[in-house]
Amino acid sequence: MTEMFKNLIAGEWAGAGNASRNINPSDTNDVVGEYAQGSVEQMNDAVAAAKAAFPAWSRSGPQERYEILKKASDEILARKEELGRLLSREEGKTLAEGIGEAGRAGQIFAFFAGECLRLSGEAIPSVRPGVGVEITREPVGVIGMITPWNFPIAIPAWKIAPALAYGNCVVIKPADLVPGSAWALVDIIQRAGLPKGVLNLVMGRGSVVGQALLQHKDVHAISFTGSVSTGRKVAEACIASSPMKKIQLEMGGKNPLVVLDDADLKIAVEAAVTGAYFSTGQRCTASSRLIVQAGIHDRFVEACIERLKGVVVDDALKAGTHIGPVVDQSQLDQDLKYIQIAKDEGGKLAWGGEVLKRETPGFYLQPALFTETTNAMRISREEVFGPVANVIRVKDYEEALHLANDTEFGLSAGICTTSLKAATHFKRNSEAGMVMVNLATAGVDYHVPFGGRKGSSYGPREQGAYAKEMYTTVKTAYTLA
Ligand code: NAD
Image (cartoon, rainbow, N blue to C red; front, top):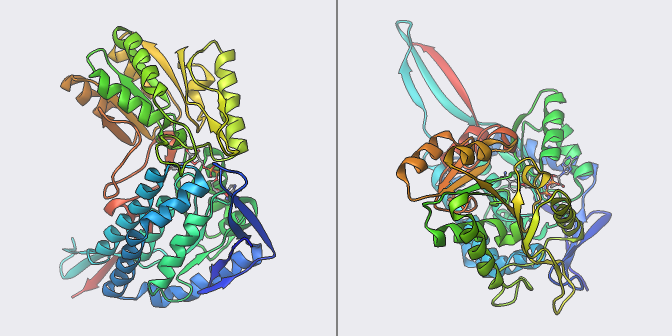
């Protein structure tokens, strides 16, 4: 009997007429569970519950919020192996990556528990004699959250934790493809003592419950992570609604990793291979464009292929697996489509790109490395979101910087070099929100801002203390003494 997981509305678990099957991409015979597919009515009930809970929660003290977030953090950390296993089973990350991500969710809740106690304001003199000015931060209201499948516990955590810490109420709609980790997270937070209605979960289709959330007049802000095309729809709906909603969009990437002739080859290869292919390349920060100077190019490509030969692609839950499966058939089809596009454009498939058979039926793809590509090709310009990367040969640093910035995205960018001058210049002149020196473009901390520029992001940054830009609104109060 497959377990049925329900939506959380006004503090009660509510079933829905429909459910979707959550399938393990390492073994498509394995059903993780049946997850409720909410309706527009359920979404409306969830928003109404959040609205009703807001007056009391927004006035709750920092100690109460601290205790709830801390308790949630403690349970997530105590159960990170089990949560990590669920994550790997439903999404296809390796067990080590799954446990790491679950642990990250716990650390995020601990950080924002602390933030509950650190909210501050300012009292400053007015330019008018006898008048005082106070600047304070208040919660925004009801926050709608729409999240993707690729970080199914970390992304819900880094949105929910600051929203609650700063006194907001939440309605979250996780990705319908991978809802189990978000369900488990919401269950933990609710049991940590949250008043009814402060946090609501409505699972289901983006075009149904997602749209209902975007269009609801009682939702004050939307925090979205996902693809650029959905992000654009989210923004349009939020601006069209009355009143307009505050928005935060985190979207795609085509992140460059520059490798200069003077790079430490070992560091560069490690940054490229782990950044491009680990987590099956399904990271918005994946190092998918490898921009390599001519003098090191051949040695770099050869060393990457050697490194890739030792990479094990297999069942995410198996010991010894380095890369798990692609998340589902349609993402695998997209990866294979781009492999064909890159070949048709004249790229040389230097390694991999084959669909692999393993003990159990799953979506296994050998990492693909293309060489002899240009930055004008579609493989360099469009996000594949799979274990596919391409090498672009350049003559010098100036050309590398120019190509790194020649993209409509701007999430993360990296450089491998032993030159302080080149590293410093790159940090200042990269048009990305996050810059890495001698590190992969993927892999970030949780206590500092996360986000990009250009087509990758829109609105305030996520994570760290900067999250308050999204989850609070500033009030300026004047008093005649
Ligand atoms: P997606 O855009 O297909 O879906 C994201 C979410 O939006 C899902 O919950 C989906 O159900 C919902 N949705 C879809 N259509 C909707 C609609 N019309 N109205 C409302 N909601 C709708 O993205 P995905 O395939 O789940 O995730 C992969 C994408 O996410 C990639 O582009 C990746 O780069 C991006 N991503 C970005 C970041 C970041 O922080 N920049 C992090 C992770 C993933």
